[in-house]
Length: 389
Image 1 (cartoon, rainbow, N blue to C red):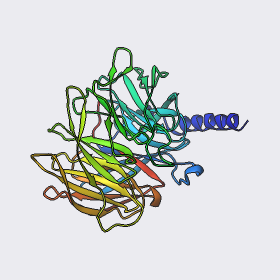
Image 2 (cartoon, rainbow, N blue to C red; image 1 turned 90 degrees about the vertical axis):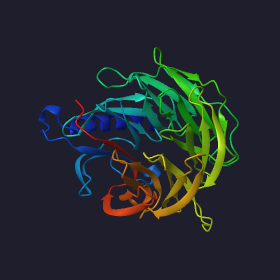
Image 3 (cartoon, one colour; image 1 turned 180 degrees about the vertical axis):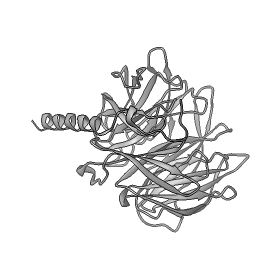
């Protein structure tokens, strides 16, 4: 009975969300803009204070974010991703089992709900469109699977065409590693392989997609093994060198891997703590990004509440911690670097703020810009730079 009532309520909320957004024909025309889309957790089970997906017009020179839309009626719209044309925005719904598809107005930046589609699992946490823009690949965290679903011509999503369970022995953490927990699906720089850090199995899987069918095919190489209890979470790639960097959530480290772009094979080279040696509190790793210059790796710490800057050795690719910048909030689950590569925005989930920083091109250090956006339980930010036709 409870499930029936919840499903009925969700259908009502979905209808409300559709009705809350005006038709694209009524949206006022504006000049080219940069827009930021923020996903926020919403449910009481998560002790969340967010209301949905917020759309902001961003003036980087003035450091101003202006709210242009708040799309409510969505459960935990957490991680967001555009299709390859940036005409459509997709959101996973944390703790549930579906994805919502949204049309993006190319002028105003506002979004309009198209449909919702089951992921074939529970608690989807990450998603990405394949390079041909035919399929969306999703990581189902709670049920340990990867799903693919077709992107229809109108941007809506079709039913799951492939559902792949991830196999392996769980790690040693008693509560966080009881089974497979894929936390990200990310294509490498060439768009050939999908790299999947699995927090529950202490492995990093590699897949490729058959774009004629949407089926996922395991990579040639065996999954890369992380340290026991590390909890691989997110990955990013060096812009020019065959290197991948994985932030490990549970032991707060970053692993440097050599990356074979022909086979997708990952070989560990180094493991470095993301926190100062003097820190004795509890903290977990969250987001990771390599700067456009390829000189630095940045990673966020929840508990220490900071973003660490690590310098990349230009010859070996190995990391050396350089500095730690407090995020001026609690629980920086996520951060995003804007399209310029100059500005970083830290999403402090537990203190309801997004805080702006300038990345020093010489040192990789972060300096607060004074930009602070107040919004409930922010967990993801994606940017749309221009009015893509």
